[in-house]
Length: 355
Image (cartoon, rainbow, N blue to C red):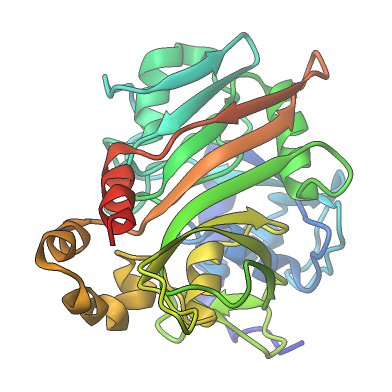
């Protein structure tokens, strides 16, 4: 394990004083089955971009972080699978999110939770550059004060996330009991419970074989914004496994190659941008994904004009979370929710299917 990045001690002292003097809200996180390394590094990976690592170190030193109910004394405290990490955070300087009348496609709702089919272009929670117009703003408007407070001011009820331009099924907790139960299921990744998460993606080319597994650890890329497959032991590197199944092949040639494919991806872990990075890693990035597949855009030039226009006009990564299965936090019933491909992805799939 690499040594932690050096900190500016004067800056840390100032931040620690700010923490001690500020009003607080609390976040609760549960470490996954492969969690290891320093507490500050793990928290930085989980909470970016909201908190810097130096800010997290200051919070730990101010006594604002507990692990399994005991105060963490040092930033280098070692974490283990299943640890319960609670973080008292200063209220953000930016305004607290308020309700906004943003339409939501609600698949299910009761006193404990709400399940939605998230639309493209909707950021899940407020953050730098996106203080309004988020899913959290829509949920506050719809649910009022009934959302779980465990996620803190900016993330009430949020137990998992989808990227801004990824569509599909999400579950949100409406009380603290539901939040804890759901968070534990997501941290377990379905190893001992019924949790299932499956996605549909349209990718360039055809992955080798009709099904396969991508086992490649992920960490921050050099630009510190994107993710990349990493083989080192950096503090931010996390084990990641994606299983894929080729469902449809478009314009398949006698040699087995094709223009594009519809694939189903199932997550054994849940890392930031995992499917996007893993599919690009094996040479089949998602259509429309400029962050991880920008070099493949010229492949559209080989398509007939009417299909090329559909592909080139597709404004985002072609990724849809079509399936979510989990255990209801109070009834214990296994709930299953599916959402069909959104209209833009279905239009592209239909166009490619004519090849």
